[in-house]
Image 1 (cartoon, rainbow, N blue to C red):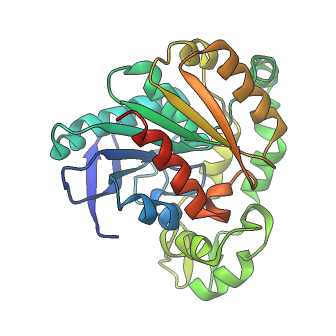
Image 2 (image 1 turned 90 degrees about the vertical axis):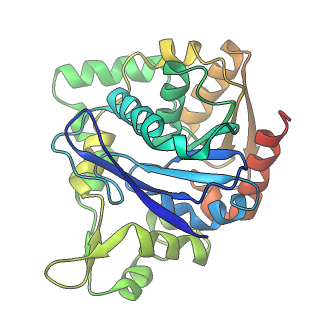
Length: 293
């Protein structure tokens, strides 16, 4: 999979980066990764999609090779900046169909992009987006007011995450079948080890996304999420993992019931089902995106 680096000095005062394939005249997929990952983490799935689509991988603030950028600017601003970068750099693809795909946190960011720019994408597939129900968001907001939400379990776990290893092979061995990587195909875990880690200044390798940044995202939530979801008119399919988070399944079901432009399907696996079976995920994405003609 041949990709070229791109960069965009964004209006928030830092540089966003990512990679894209060489424009071929095929439809293009704009892809946003999950929290703590980067676009190339999903290389096994994306390589399969590259047979039918060009790719534009967008790494958000503090992820991949994008600048850390100081404080996290929030979910909504992150969506605005991803859209800004796409509008600045995506012109190289010319007049071809443009599709949107995102996983987890990146799925929510993509949904906010769809709400903000209804004409930007022809169709979209969201992979297990973490759609917090209105009741959950209300509880998060209340906890935020009294300073408790930043102490939630996911954020605390992220802060404690190991971030340095002697080399990539040691990192692979330490992560294999552990925690969120349980069930990942070998090629998928190597995608993470090869692309979400970088050479450290003091030797060895370290996470590109600082554990504190991952925790910041887990300690925050999108503002006016359900008002934004109601505005989505782009034909969208949500692919969820059969064994993923129950709260996300509830949020997805609610969105599908309230918005006629959105449908859902379930695939075997957990929250990272596309890393457990990249071929099945790529086939499902391809099937929906190309169904529009």
